[in-house]
Image 1 (cartoon, one colour):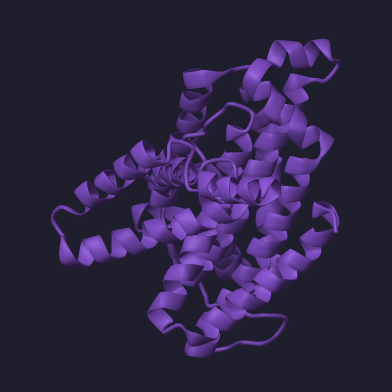
Image 2 (image 1 turned 180 degrees about the vertical axis):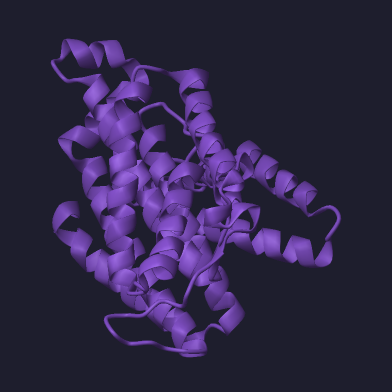
Amino acid sequence: MSATRSLPVICAIGFVALIVVGLLLPEWAMFLTTMAFAKGLVALGIVCLMRAGLVSFGQGLYFCIGAYVAGLMANWTGITDIFLLTALGIIASGITGMIFGPLLATYRGIFFAMLTLSLSMILYGFLSKMTALGGTDGLNVAAPTFLGYAPEGRALGLSLYVYTCAIVVIAGGLVRTFFDSERGLIALAIRDNELRVEYLGASVRKEIVFSYVAAGILGGIGGVISGLAIGHVDPETAYWTTSGEFVFVAILSGYLSIPAVFVGSLLLEVVRSFSNLYFPNTWQLSLGIFLLAVILLLPNGLGSLLAWRKRRRETS
């Protein structure tokens, strides 16, 4: 069975496995996993850009857009259906990406990174000054509903977890398909030599814009889920430290494996939670040591482990 044909089967098995694990998790672990997967979606968008040799330090922009879409729709219109909110988050983040993508596609390296960061910080400053949107205090977000079903307590956490897992599996499958497609392979070639890609007849600018918009949409979806899970949104979702956290996960996981992105995001949440619990004054130091160890031992990220095992099976 080819990789393309086996992908739906792998996704289905992965989804069932995640649901079984979720049923066994306590509420705090279920919430932590939901948040890790939501942030992993944003980091997956950065990985899409990393394959083209770019790193965005401003994905907090789309994370914030998605979160505020969920908050504002619930407060202004009373819309709480998670499917509709996710669709609105995709539209808002996609349009934003199409506006800024063509501008950013002309820059590379540190210039691309700093411009994306500046856009995110502009949104942070705007939301902090807008008292109508809650200012620095942010907004409370109503609990989500699922096509009319309004769960409470553990049922709400489980429903949100199942929904998040479904989104993760679908997004992971689509991104894997993109990576294996002609356009995805062109993006990988851009990382090595974009001038040669142009000589072959492909448009580097269009490929970067496509990857940037896709990254923005993934960030928006992650923001919607995060806002609904926490029940609150504030301008900190667009702050540079939030964007840096997503870059942290992308570097931790590498660009060789999609499951590694979500594993890396979950590891980050676990390390941060327990470091904050047992080392409340030095938990940032623990995170720094953890990232340094990964960089030294696995310079290509956690995904290099999975890629190494795959190559070993193929050669055996």
